[in-house]
Amino acid sequence: SEVPGKYKVRDLSLAESGRHQIRLAEHEMPGLMALRAEYGESQPLAGARIAGSLHMTVQTAVLIETLTALGAEVRWASCNIFSTQDEAAAAIVVGPDGTPDDPRGVPVFAWKGETLEEYWECAEQILVWPAGDDDDAEYRGPNLILDDGGDATLLVHQGVAYERVGSVPADTRPGEPDHSDENNVVRGLLRRVLQEDPLRWSVVAENILGVTEETTTGVHRLYQLADAGHLLFPAINVNDSVTKSKFDNKYGIRHSLPDGINRATDVLMGGKIAFVAGYGDVGKGAAEAFRGQGARVIVSEIDPICALQAAMDGYQVARIEDVLGEADFFITTTGNRDVVTAEHLVGMKNKAIVGNIGHFDNEIDMAGLAAVPGITRTEIKPQVHEWTFESGTSIIVLSEGRLLNLGNATGHPSFVMSNSFSNQVIGQIELFTKDGTDEEYPTAVHRLPKILDEKVARLHLDALGVRLTDLSKDQAEYLGIDAAGPYKAEHYRY
Ligand code: NAI
View 1 (tube, protein in one colour):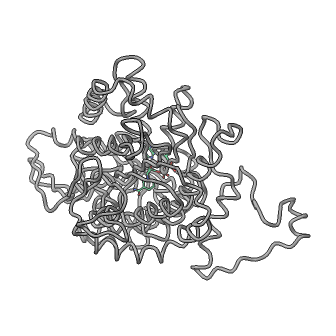
View 2 (view 1 turned 120 degrees about the horizontal axis):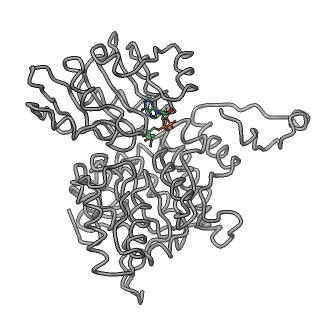
């Protein structure tokens, strides 16, 4: 279903099913619902125009409707070609009071199974904000970005650079070959927009008060931009709130990784050997999930601290090339490029299952796999492909090397996303209401104050029946902290 400039989703008739799922998710997202109760009346986001680029799932639907409940106008796209839940997208366009014939919700541009061209057109759609009926200008930009992986932020930065220097910067996606398909798509888009409107991106960038970024990889890009002196607006690093990365990245993955593998293959994990590349927050959740299913887990790391942690947690730590013929599952969680090479893929055990759960699709060399002489690809079902080598053995690759928990399943469950998204909402409020107070959020990458991080955790305790122990005045004095928090120093690592 599509109305140009207003929405583009798979099918608005899916809205009813989406609405039921959203209703159940709301019950599991106490943080977001508490923020609606706290801020519904004061409308701190009235006047905010938020361009959201984040997996268009049921949980994200609850986030979007929290932002609008606080007064924001919102336009949304997914940050991955496979991660949209079409019924959630439809329900958001229709809105709680609309019908498929009379949609009254939020503009969404997202469906499961976009092409790369469509993906970037959707990204453009959230950043080009059509004028309201009484606006003089032809379009208004957003004034806030809510990003996951940094593609929306990157598009604005690349657009501005293009306008300034007259050519498309080489590193459209850092770490990707200069002339990869995706970089060429972005270049084409920037060239077209420049012809239509030579100052589009400068205007968009000028209006933006800041971005809140969801994930490790996007945060990494933001620090790179800031270090190079290229960051155009303040950014809040949501990922490194403790209540985000130490929960979503770890416990979220512990749930959604086996969910993706099961829905894709239904192959038993117990007794098998699982190889996990990377033992950061995501790797820790992944390894624990496999162990919980009775698999024997082997971890790889480049960082001696994380390697030692993995060993102390009882995992074998090895290099991928030494376990190719042994492991039944290979999962990448590094956020790094070229972790599984074509040579590795060719050497794997017959029917090994290979998947990536890091943000971008450059962890596994899919182009190299496709170029192996004599290889054939069979679609078992969407997002599950068997690659058969000339020898007759084969491997199963999930979601074409893109994040499999969102491609083969529905991503993290609501309760953990309520923590992540409460940080997002608070981050958006901070940037919007503290606009102009340059001391608090100058153009740099910031983390939310610890007291707000603790607030997010607090909002989730009742639902789990957690009874917190009160810190007495004497005890607080003894520890040299305020009885109301923050309870830990900035350098504390949890
Ligand atoms: P992290 O930085 O905590 O962990 C990554 C680990 O990989 C580090 O310990 C690093 O030393 C290790 N590593 C890097 N290169 C390696 C290599 N060549 N071989 C072995 N290990 C290597 O990052 P985090 O938070 O665990 O995130 C990892 C990725 O997952 C990021 O791309 C992030 O954006 C993404 N992510 C995906 C989610 C999902 O739902 N699929 C959820 C949260 C994060």
